[in-house]
Amino acid sequence: MPDTVTIPRPRPVEVRDTAPDRGWKVLLHNDDVTPFDVVIFALQKAAGLSLEVAEMVAQEAHRTGTAVVRRGLTQEDAERIAGRLVALTTIDGICPGVDAEAVVDDA
Image 1 (cartoon, one colour):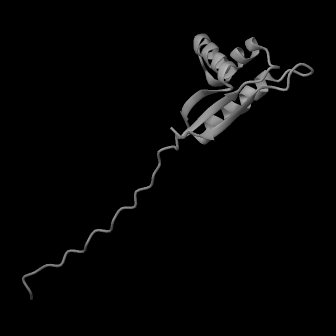
Image 2 (cartoon, rainbow, N blue to C red):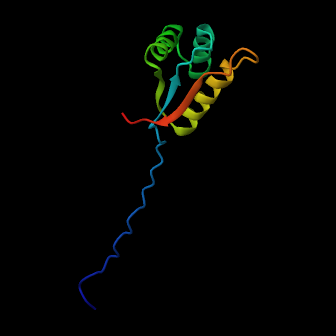
């Protein structure tokens, strides 16, 4: 009988990335049709922004053409917020709703 003992090598444990992909943002594009108050209300309801932040986002979109509504989102959350912004700003016979989109965050 030999004096050495063979110990089996442990198998490497497969580590899965379970962290959600938080590299998405929601963009709001300016339009000249949707009333400003409607946009601010929708930003508060859809994105959970305070009145002050919603006003700043709406002003930035109006001034520059595009504004970031929220960042650090999953794709699903970004798409949900963008869809709610459109739905909450759509008024039959008055305005078709804002243009909002979920995009990969390049920052």
